Length: 275
Image (cartoon, rainbow, N blue to C red; front, top):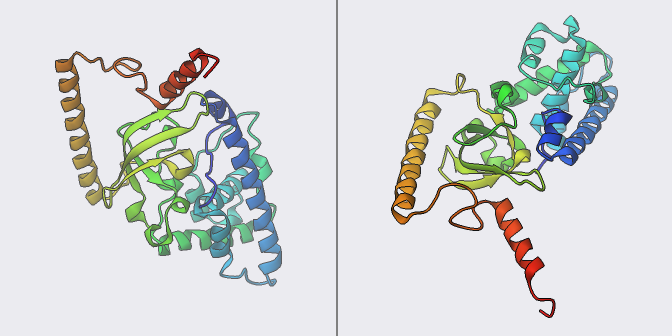
């Protein structure tokens, strides 16, 4: 499994207590950038860039990171020699622009025409493998509340046999963020097979842009949402009948993972010293 790509700003990372995740992702971006530069230097014969560069890069870093680094490079330069189609593709990405976000550190230093050739290879690779990318995500919804949202799973988080568009759609039944670690706990179901799973930030590309999803996916999403809403209503009715509040922290001492952790720590702190 490949390391996750953090697409938000350092300020956003601090807000959700994920600063270490931010810098780990940044370092991996820089490593990917240097590997791209090495590959271009050693696989360009003076006329052609070898056809397998994008494949090998995706095998090392995952599609999402290679795309992230190349798109960042393209938007920093906007050199027309990269190709209008590639520039339009890169414009779908939303990069952090804060003064403390050193995105320039993972801009590829290579001739624009070769950056363009490699980007065409990557886009062809994604089409051949029917893989969804950041251009199919709603970038404005990154690191928001994922409850009741349709997410796109990062290709690198899926086994080879399932690394296609069909298995990348994931509906969120429950979402919370651990107050101590900042890690997201994303529980839901895969739209393709209905299997339940728990994901974290590193497993997803982002929230799917519902304007772009196929009609078949829209129908499944509507079905999942109806089922989810029916369960919520049934649960609310049961709680009202039993006099249980739906507010966090009441009814059960471990309503959420973070509250369970606090509950256990309090029990440990208050236990007799001789035990």
